Length: 317
Image (cartoon, rainbow, N blue to C red; front, side):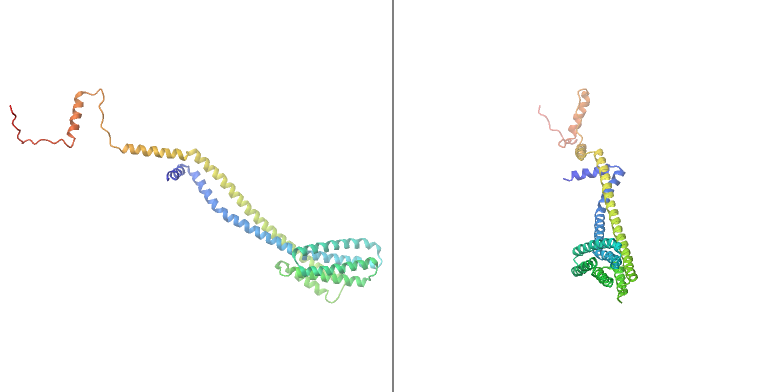
């Protein structure tokens, strides 16, 4: 039962040095597979975590764009209410952009399970629809329009604060929202104040988006490197394994080695047997044959020499 294992061992001993090194390389790389798989899995989890944080903060960043649209719509609505008919076109464009952003924000909040923020957004929709109707029908004054826009902007700040709570990456946005709220705390609705508050929020948004993009790109690069290393190890293992198999086939099959072992053991056993007595051939001389027979009889254990001083019995005549 040990003969196949012994034959394989002898085959390995008969391999060249480079083939032995290749076999050891295959074993060493096989031991590296598990750490590489674990490393790839860890980078994949880190990438998923970064992407999840990016998705969770998406409503807050979208609320910044919504606030920017409200500031721009406030300016064009004031021009329309003052009698500038050519400002109606830009106002409608801003209105369509705000409608789209409200829909997107509602979809993002629903996917992120922000129930309280969804209620705030519902109130914003109601106030927005009422404001647009009053502006279109001409039943709103410039002062009322500015106050309504300011209320919507403050609700947007509340949405940003609710979404960014609990996220360390959203610290710049929370600070900017707090500064913007303090600027509008005195009830000032002047355009420079709103522009300054919105500039703070846009700068914080750009900072967060840059950090999130860098984080995602970093984990994507690490995952790609881990996957490339794993594929390279697998390719090297396949190449070295094929090289070793070809070398083993060229060296000899295990069955031939076992047969050689059997024949060698039989030959050694035959050689250990006692040498047989030479047999006379037909061409030998009779005197040599007689000498050999005499030596054979003398070597027999039963043949004892008769003592020389033993008297002989008289023979009867």
